[in-house]
Image 1 (cartoon, rainbow, N blue to C red):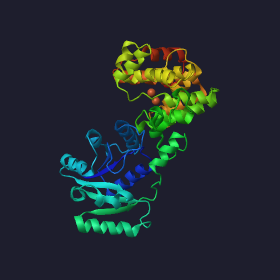
Image 2: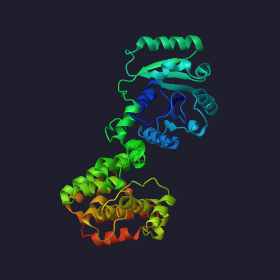
Image 3: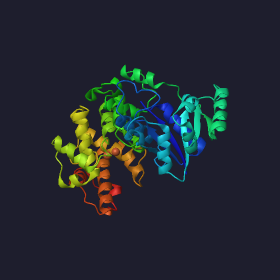
Image 4: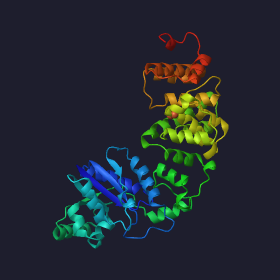
Length: 404
Ligand SMILES: [Fe+2]
Ligand SMILES: [Fe+2]
């Protein structure tokens, strides 16, 4: 295997890091790329007020996840766990123990590459790993880079590869941090990383989570879920907005409900139950034991108590998985948006999409019936609210009921 080791403070991880990671995976045909956030970087002190190593670890994990290559990318906490300065030589020695049969590549930016001979134990570093240095344009400092490559090869027997990354964004982390504290300019950050920064109030952001703008709410919600879920959440939001327009609901309300509806989707059962119990959210026995049902309850609690959303948003989230009898317009719209958004794919989806814009109640009944059938096929208990929704909204003579 070819393994890239990409160290740095990641304070915060930004678009430049992700562009470099993507390019290195492509250029070196890496089987694995391991981000290694520094615990205590040896080359420079971390800026005052920097997030803890654990929070930087969390940020780089969120950032790495956005590459959507879960089998390739990994985040390794070896330097965060190790006491004292984080020396690359020690990290590579540890990596060689961990992956003894694999080809290790150390990934570095131009600045670091030019100072490499001054690091601690450069000879040991260059024995343990090959080096890949990336620059925005090789032409910029081609002569210097090539001279350095020659020197490392001659003096240390190193293997060095230079790669150009045209979309490598030129942004200094220092500038980025200053801008963040002024509430400006988060364009260089992945939305989910920015959402985590807001949630944890890092870099002096100090956001009031109960009064976020729509864009901020999106970032915060996206920071709570796996990147592979984002297409579904975005699809649900856009579908909810279209349904709002069709049926005369408030688009802003529907967007916020959709943005938050799955925000607790990746919690454990214990986390769901603990939050619901803390805020007195009633759970029946079936809900307590089913994660799929729990996330709509804990999602409702988060929407109400953490994100300060009004009841109409909270209720829509609460019923988005099971539905129930006597739903509000907004409940129905979120239930259906979640069901028919563009990423959904099941045999009846086109019919349900059309029906959602023609006859809302019939669409809810059809959705409930499809869920009931699916649960029965899988030998699972159907929640009584779903059965109630079907009985309440069903209409005679619908073609999808015939073979039911
Ligand atoms: Fe959901
Ligand atoms: Fe969903």
